[in-house]
Image 1 (spheres, rainbow, N blue to C red):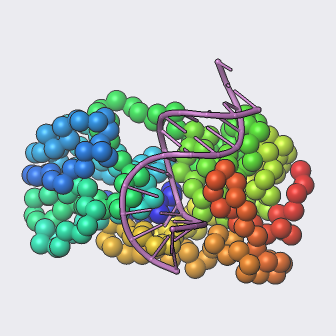
Image 2: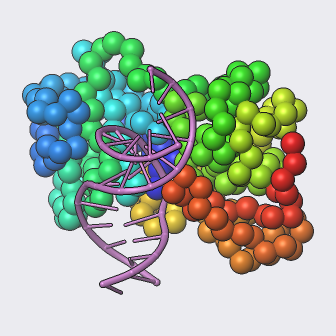
Image 3: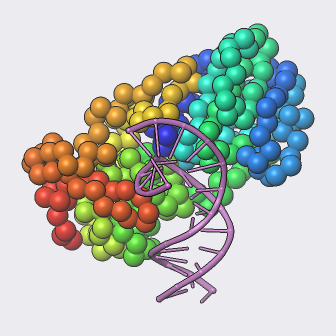
Length: 270
DNA sequence: GTCCATGTTCTTTA
DNA sequence: CTAAAGAACATGGA
């Protein structure tokens, strides 16, 4: 559920809820097979620490503590990160509970366990992740697309090329820029690539403004669903009329992921 | 039973 | 060697 807009919304809601001294007094339910590095003493690292702030890098949610160490949590496909009262019932598939002074808890629930809980330490650690799409310069984006022959749709999902874009927003951005998803990335003209760069920023901005997309599982730290799914123009709309030209939206598979586009508006061209 | 799912990473193939 | 394609991971819903 979490692409950049959903992760950003979780971060925003967490920061709003974690005012002042959010002191950790207890850590439970740590799921060993989601820990990175495997076997690290997460509870030991966190106990007694205060959370200084929460931020985002790509799809990672980064917590910074008062000893300048950090962890990140990745929500994978089905992860939920919420703040709840200690007395709230503990749901199935709860893989982390961080108890804060004052009776609240940060909880991670992730049925499929594609997510991760990672100890980062104090040093910089981007792990070869590409630039943030909201900050990237068009010229940099164009250059990066030149580096691969893969279909542009597949390239947008590569977190080393550009961070934070997933299956929903790749399809939505390609539609907004009228770029066929199958075009080899390096075959896009500079002009088309620059337009795609702008479309990515517009689509992500709008999605953040609508608190992300809830297809099934996604909720923010308050438990609130997103609203952007109602504004999807192609994602999961195969067979329905294109909002621009009424041609039925098509669905194909690219790189093992379903891909939705308008065969008319996104017809093959340079 | 079948197919599909907002993601990443490891393995295989070219 | 590198780049790209495929499979795997684990669970639930239609």
